[in-house]
Length: 253
Figure 1: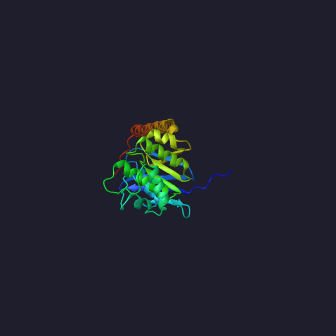
Figure 2: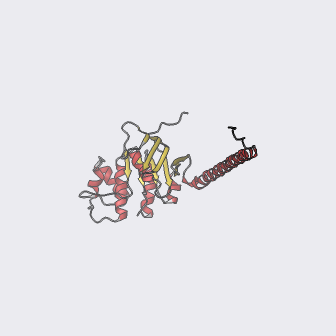
Figure 3: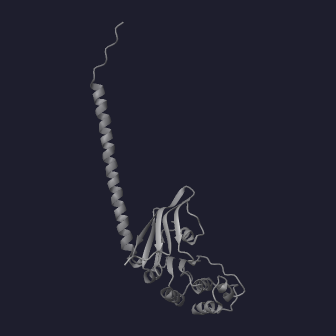
């Protein structure tokens, strides 16, 4: 059976932040229903990569592909909830009112509640409810469990399981990633590595990559040392030959 075509993909993407290269040849693909995590150190460029996938940031090089008419929804790390009520906000992206209300209620929210003075958890749940109510083809989630209680996290996990959308998730919540992801992407040293297993397998895989990189660096250092010694021997030998030659006779007048 041929592999499924990606609904959203990046190929050989490059992006610099001033003099610092964030990505250098990053490849990423998401097929329908695939739930993947994006892992990397703080400042590695994970949120920037999400913006490139969303079409909000242009890379310096490479290609972005999105299937025609694909609905790509981002839930940012700091959502901004506006409108007269939570239902107004949840419908603003085109969701049907009854579906928006149902999603809000699933997250324990009252659709008629005003948008002023919301807690961090209410803001997060409202943004997630709107995203699911819009029936996305791709969900890009940046720290989706921030401020969520156990009930809300369980609701999010069930909605992800029931959704036909592909999802790419950036999160520091290891237990959440272990439960919901089937693929892992690791942003490390300007490269993007891919593992076709969920986050539960990430640590062993990342350690193997790090060990391989350390071994390659050790071999390169040894090779450079041998080359340096060869060059030094060559210089010494040439100097010895020159010193052993008789001085040229002075020209006669």
